[in-house]
Amino acid sequence: MDRNLLALLILDTLTVVIGWAIYLSNVPPDTALFLFSSQTILILGFISLGMTFFYSFFAGGRSIYFWPAVAVIVIGAVVVFFNWFAGGILILAAILLLIFSRAEGVGNRLGIFLVFLGFSILALLPPIEAMLNLSFSSLDIVVIVISAALILVGLMISLRRGIAIESYLGYIALSLAFFLLPPYHEVLRIKSNGAYGIYDMAIIVISTILFSIFLFASLYALKKQDWVSKEIERGYDELRRGNWERAYSVFKTLHKRGQIYSSVFNGMGVALMHMKRFDESEKYLREALRIRESDEYRTNLGNLYYRKGDINKAMEVYKSVLKRNPDCYLALNNLGRCLMRKGKIDEARRYLERAMEVNPNGTQAKRNYSMLENNEE
Image 1 (spheres, rainbow, N blue to C red):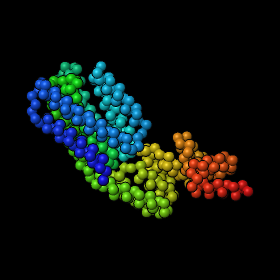
Image 2 (image 1 turned 60 degrees about the vertical axis):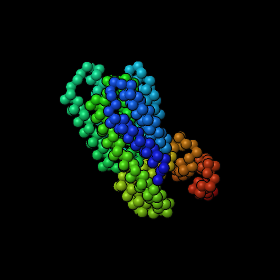
Image 3 (image 1 turned 120 degrees about the vertical axis):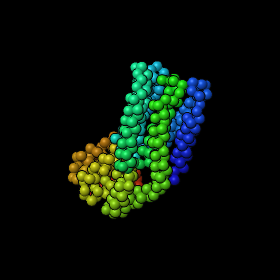
Image 4 (image 1 turned 90 degrees about the horizontal axis):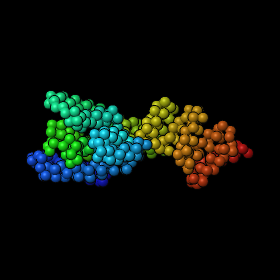
């Protein structure tokens, strides 16, 4: 079991528990004690939220959206001090982008978007009403019901389609971010009324429910994590042995049980490729690449085209890998093999020699180079 992740979940839980203890303590509104309580929740929450994001995004692969999302959050935080509404919109958009930037185990994006939309409506409607000097108690209730329904539907979609533990962390971070919204408003005096109103309490209650669901889901996933890792390794061991159908069965079982990992999709794709089920193989290999860009995964996609007989397309893929990583042994070797097939001996020799320089112990490049030399003779 990942002890670092377990410690992080304990910290997140303490933040929510302490927050609720303060919320339920009936601190008199419009007092210094009320402001101090809000500051306490906010500081604890920011520490917890920051560590959750750090673990979730720096512990694994990230897509190209990650750093742009971080930049937008920083810009939004600056804009808040000049125009809190515009800054808040930027931060909300960046948080969604940041969650989607998690390359591994993102889970179902529609589910995450609906949950995020529900919370965003709760977050944005009160300040909009304040800006326009509107006050409709019946509308407040309708908005809360609509928001709760969106969150519930998004939650059901995500849980039904299965998500990985990294996605649970994304939901936990999302629920913590919104849990901190009411005290954030009070501390920075954004729509500050010295008390937590109906929207604030709706956000607090719904975010706590969401947090609780994914806290228990994360704990359950942690319990299964060792088994999942062993099964993935067993699947790749079957691939190394050439037991394609057995390997596919292992990965397919993991997929059916909601293990949305790039390594699972890649394993399925490789097994199906050797089983000559090329269309299915391409679908899973592309899904693996969508989750996490990897030289190995992209090279496997090139291998698929090679096995289908589309040498030109295979070469394009291998070249794209080498453009990112000029020292990728597999791409160098496989591109050399393609050039051999096309009769471009001098070019093939250059790539195979480079592959042997990169990995002197690699047998594939040596074997291909020997074939090239013997045929030339």
